Amino acid sequence: MKPVFHWKLLAATLIMLVLSACETYPEPGSRFVMVVTSIPTERTQLQYRPGLSLGLLRGITRKDVEDERVWFAHCYNAVPQPLNHRRFGFVLLPPGITIKPDEVIEVRAEEAVGGETPYSRFFGRFIEKAAANPFEYFDDGTWKHLFRCGPVGASGTMRVEAFSLLHTWDYDAAKAEEARNNHINDDELRQHRIVLGECSPGTDSWARWKVRLPPDLVVRPGDYLDVLAGSTEGTHSTGPISEAVCRVKPPDKRYFNKTQGSLTVQCDAPAIRLTNTP
Image (cartoon, rainbow, N blue to C red):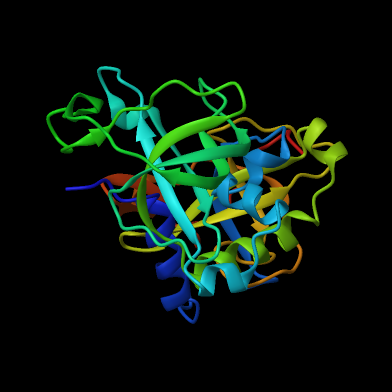
């Protein structure tokens, strides 16, 4: 059994597409309540799948995806909890080369971001197919036959396991996200005026947002905001991001929905402004 790549993001994307007409789902120009989940300071922290975004910057085209030349690949660090140390990215194959899921391949990582090693989320190009010995796999007790990350060569060469093909909808969503991110400038990131957050439009569903703060509003992860909705994340929308109005009191627990075992504030929770705050 293999782990599911970014299962929460994928599920959220599909849910947003299905529920876009739901009256509780924030439409552009409407108001909603969300919780702040993080405050990015670098552009790569804005990207839901940085490895794919790196590939776009390196020239991956939709035709490459249609021709089945772009694959998702991964490996795991040999630590007690390997699922927390997964290295994953996207690999471009040359024309005429075909591979299968679970094949080990040699790649050259052209660019990478994040994590304890330089190759947490990478974009690379295929070099050749590679053989793997049984001792290069391990079992953490839950997921079977995880491929161990080996040493990285001086020129960025590494061996990874092919996982699945990239689909055109992945590519289109990533291109749209880059267009939305273009509405955010580097000064705003340095000034901590961009936050990421989420809310739930219905049971077992959630929506993620990029939100701009007004200059006089300071927040921390875990704060709740009243927000004017902009473009929906996870779709083909390319418009501006959402805008925060003010901080609000944490909603009562009855305004939270279960989302994959967690509790997420409802998007239509009441917005009760905090006193003596912007």
